[in-house]
Length: 228
Length: 53
Image (cartoon, rainbow over all chains, first blue to last red):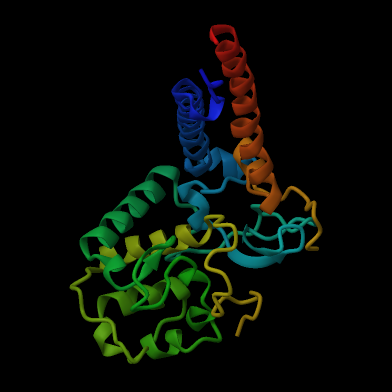
């Protein structure tokens, strides 16, 4: 009888497949928990204690948010409340949001929750992209809060007749079809004043999420690589 | 920049972050955990077949 080859032996392949399937399962379960830890929202005390979380707590809406190139990471990172010497968030500089910079954790959570539900009810993702999910029919909203068009030098405050970024955004959201922003104008979705406030809080919070530089070369961000 | 080994820059250092630091890291890891055990299994099966044969 000819000598049997290991390569044509069923047991060798069965054991190899069992090993790879088993190990991959363990790895994927571990990856699930690792991801859960990384995307869990931080708290107000994290912000108070200067702890940088990938997804900061809701009270981040009380702080000034910028987006700055980080030399070490070679892409932009959200900087909350001004930067430390190494370019990370210092959580010092506050910024009024609808006239207040003392939103409590409960109030900010409720506002963000309203905004999140609002974004789902009005189906923003049908046209926009949020954190990589959605469409590119309308502008990417992941870092919309940082778009200088809404800032003091941008056109949106003058167009909506408001003096702050959040009020201009809220006004636009309530009457989007009044303002010529884009060739593909946003339709009126019947967003109420309170919903608009929530949506703007949702957008401000979303801009503070560390997305590893995504969206890449989103040119409308002040200070971004190839920024306009 | 663009060196074979790049500094570890993830926000939260984790095992999975080390795997995605560069093109080689995941490759080396997967070859280690797939190919090395298969060589071991191969040797065991070869020994078994020789014993049976």
